[in-house]
Length: 104
Image (tube, rainbow, N blue to C red; front, side, top):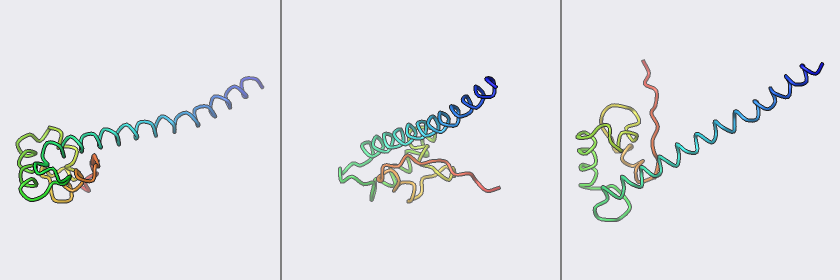
């Protein structure tokens, strides 16, 4: 009887603890993404208006091609090796970007 109670208590503890650790990890990813977006915006927003626009778009796309494993990599959400307008817009929005699974 004691071992059954101990087993149930242990299972309940894991049921509560596991989701908490999963959510904590996601929060770190979100913070890292926002930090990377802020860093990229500060590097490439030459006119200081808080957006990547005009010639800045071309500059950021060229920078990603030149250094595909740099800070801009996470914004290439479709993993095509280029930053399209939507992916560049995510930098302004402060989103870190996540890889989407490619359909095979």
